[in-house]
Image (cartoon, rainbow, N blue to C red):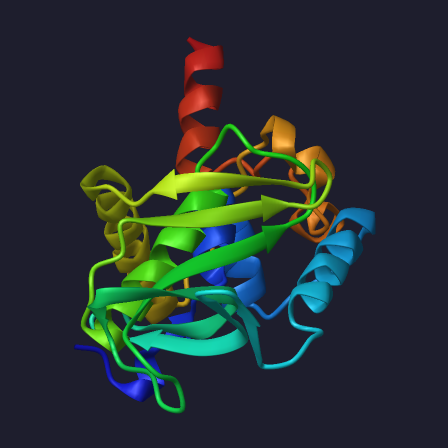
Length: 219
């Protein structure tokens, strides 16, 4: 179990899954820069949090901006939306009749991605909710603004294992205050931290590598 001072930001799971260096620049070095994509992303999240705290839709209770945490993962953050559905096998909620079961819904700019960064963040939210409410959550949803569509995500053991592995490495890097080296990839072009990260600049050659190369050239 992690202590409060060791908790990391839940939102960092998505950053880390997308790019370990991006996560370190934001969460260790405290560097950030907006571009059009991040502004649109922030707008999407603002809309998700912009209504009443609770909203009833039949047998579904919609809660926005719910604070969540997990002592076993050492994560804390905010869920965009959590939908509580009436379920006899669920649990009681303060101020509500009956029993309820939660499902996280994460709002994202753009369209469905091939990589699992968004899915891993959603899964981490569900794992926090499970620990808080003592329940099991089988699936969650990603809502993409560009396509106005939902993707239902199965929160299986493989995805949960990837989340645990990523979070463990996040804690290791954060404890060492270590920022991974630059590794140029295609997604770098859309990253708001490209100018800070400087992925286009080649890495400086080490002293050992320089002497080894020079000795080889002289032979």
